[in-house]
Amino acid sequence: MILWIILTMMIALAAAGLTIPLVRRYEQRPQAKTVDILKGQLGEVDAQAAANLIDTAEAEALRSEIKRRILVEDRDAGTAARPFPQTAMPWVALGLVAIVTLCATALYVMMGHPELTSSVARNVSTTAPEAQTAAADPKSHPMGEVASMISSLETKLQQNSGDAQGWQMLAWSYTRTGRPADAAKAYGKAAAIEPNNVEYLSAQGEAMVQSEGKVSDEAAAIFQRALKGDPADPRARYFLAIHRDQTGDHKGAMDDFVALLKSAPPDAPWASQVRTYVEDLAKEQNVDLTGKLPPAPAAAAPGPNSAQVAAAGKMSDADRKAMIHSMVDKLAGELKANPKDTGGWVRLMRARMVLGEVQQAAKDYKQAHQAFAGDAAAQAALQEAAKSLGVPSA
Image (cartoon, rainbow, N blue to C red):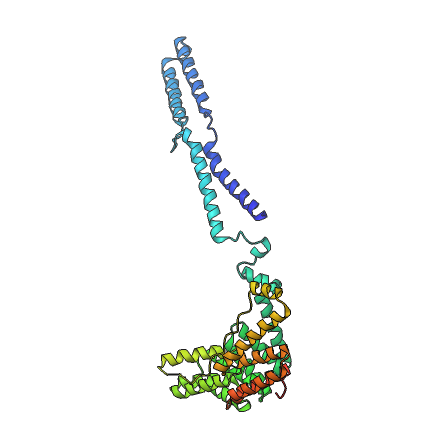
């Protein structure tokens, strides 16, 4: 605000300096009075000549001198020429004021920083306002807080480079801030400290893929090391399948993808994304996957709406139990028609245990186990779920 006041005063003073000469009144020059005096003197010479006080030659010489001076004074007393009429001068002055003010304001808008305080404006030539704010208080901006955390981690790891978890955290921070190449190096340091940690190796390989945009031979070698530690690691298996596809082994890559999906646990969060990728890849390569992929997980049954809940609340205990039994029987019928649904078997066993039908839950578990004969991963997932529910013989 102070800066604006100072600039306004400066513009006003400049405008005044330009306009005062144009609008002031021009007084009659003093030479006009001198001409009158000379004319009077000319009359006195004539009177003295008539009275014979001076001779004719002297009177003629005085007349010539006085007339010469009158001519000089009349020429000097003439009004100076002006480019504009006297009545136009105020308008010319106002125009100059407007031009000066507008030009000064436009120049400041283009080159100045009216949005900054005076303390920030002094440093605007070397530091951006955002950077100054973050430097003054890094925690006042989310990116400033992350940068401060990364800087702190880097300093700590310089002092203690043997902290594998510290390198993992630093790598995670690099990934979150869009620095996959730095993340790969940090994961590599963590893996060097704990070479048997599959998580570090697998994450290092993924960061390299993000940085390079492909599964390079170096990244594939890291994934191979991860598989030696854990042959079931899904991330390493997925990217190695992509590497095979990139190197031209499309059939081998498709076999690897199918095997990965078959071994996926029922609740694997990555299974649906991998399945979509494999199906799109099969369409692109004209590969028929009929009967090769495991059945897609059944979508979770929609919950009751408000009207159904209100209706159930008005039912008697017997009617309510009958309704629940009908829903469970419907689920059992669906599983009989499509037994390759691990999620459905888990929901059925849970419902049986809630209803107190413990023996029936054990029978359902036995049927589910038989439905996935030969699929060790699915059987293991069903067994784990049955144990958590308290199903007998699980």
